Image 1 (cartoon, rainbow, N blue to C red):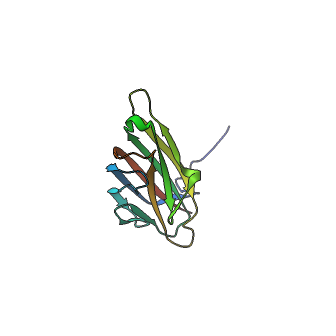
Image 2 (cartoon, rainbow, N blue to C red; image 1 turned 45 degrees about the horizontal axis):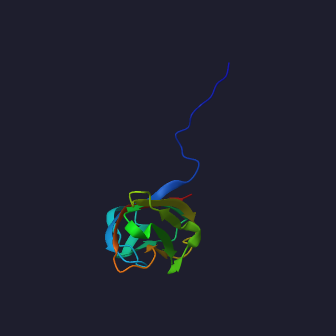
Image 3 (cartoon, rainbow, N blue to C red; image 1 turned 90 degrees about the vertical axis):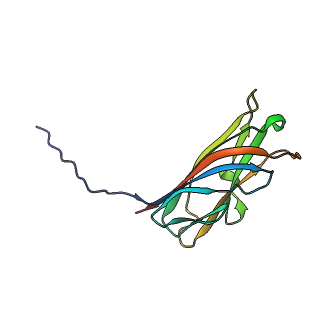
Length: 147
């Protein structure tokens, strides 16, 4: 006869803190997107100003973002996560518009940038130069994992 037992104890990482932010903005190319807090729980992720979240020292962070916009005749936009003031091109998204002029961008990534020091996280939007900004909406979710 085979016997097995199931333990209720966790043996791996757990979510130590999490936050979610929404974005709804008419913005121009190169701008930092404003983040509106939906919730912040656990204290490891905090908003420092309108466009920046602070990731406190932790094990690592999981970041997920989703945006939709109507770039119209520009036909695309890019999202560039910005860590400590530097665009993190590895985590960027390029969003080409469909025939209706609607485009969406999403990505998720893990970062260990905040292992020992706090880091800032924001999101730049860019698109071909034009005199008219467009509306972009979306969300950013951030989870801190501890061991």
